[in-house]
Image (cartoon, rainbow, N blue to C red; front, side, top):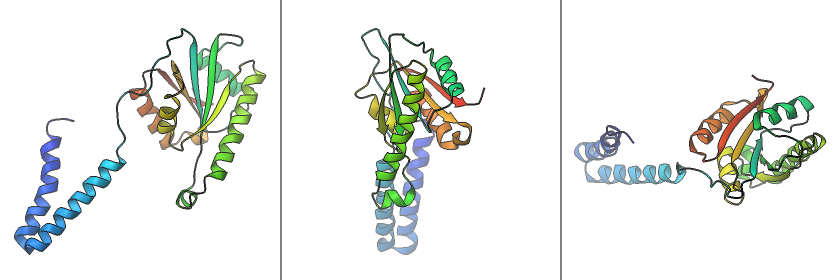
Amino acid sequence: MTAWKLPLIVAAITVPIVGSFLIAGPPAGFLAGALGVVVLLVVAARMRPMGPIGELPGDGRHHLLLVVASPIEEPSAVRQIRVAAGLEPGADTEVRVLAPARIGFLDRWASDVGQARDEAQRNLVATVAALAKDGIDAEARVGDEDFVQAVEDQLQTYPADEVVLVSADPDASEEAESAAAELGSRLRADFRHVVLGGE
């Protein structure tokens, strides 16, 4: 955090509290203080730790974590991924494909994740089949709906030396771009973002 941010944060917290005490008296001041504490707790609970993600494997083999936002079925898409990741059929590379379960707003509130997990499973089946057809064996996992959290979870049990996030043009949303920026800055492993059909 830069030096000027901390005094600004402290001022943003204390000025409304002191102002409430002076203008409306102690009850308003205590209410403003309590509201400030609640806001701080909510912000702190929602913040994600920003340290490095993952440990590098120590066995000398190439371990690739391939994160797919949508199913990869076209041979041209598989070729684009192979080139980006340097994958060769028959090479000593372990590949794990990860598909985040994309949960809708209402489903999240209803705790109904079954449909999202089924969709992620279908993405995985299509992607693993397309890779196998091209001579690349891979295992598959469904992950958290948040790209960064899904990668962080997987890297706790699967130490990869390379992570590739794959999105298609329609999926190259703000969310995928934001995840790519964060993963690029936090991962210990090499990272690439492949936009299918893009340059």
